[in-house]
Length: 137
Image 1 (cartoon, rainbow, N blue to C red):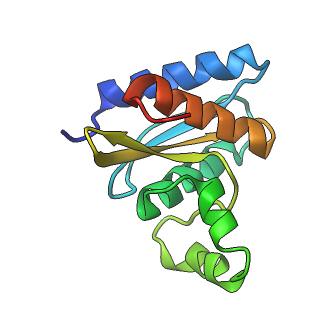
Image 2 (cartoon, one colour):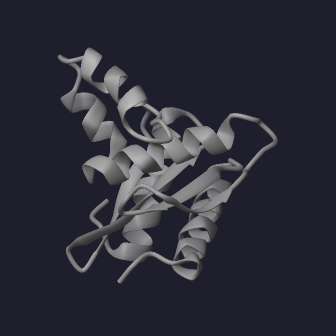
C-alpha cells in the first residue's frame, strides 16, 4: 500500500510529539519508497531545515536503511557518500535522522528528522517508525 498524505501525516505528528518530549521543535519529512516527498512540516524558521530533513528521508528511502547505519558502513569510503549528493535527484543529507518505513515487510517510504543533534534526530526518527510501523527500536 503506497504511503499517502494521511499516513504521512500520522508520522509527522508522532515525530513532532516525540521531539516535544525531548524539548525539540523538529522538522519532519516523509517520502515515498521512490524518494519523492509526500509531506514536509517545518519545526522552526531555519531556512535549511526542510532541505536537511528531506535529504535524510531521500537517502533512507534510496538505500532502505537508517542513515546512521549507512554512514557507519561508508566510513572507509568517504568519497562514495559524497558522490551521492550529486547522483540522487534532489540531493541527500549525510547525517543521522533518516529512517526507512517498513510495513508488512516492505519499504513504503522513509522519514527524515532535523532540529536536534544528530543523535536526537536519529532517536526521533527511529521511535516514530517503531511506534507506527512496528520497527524494532
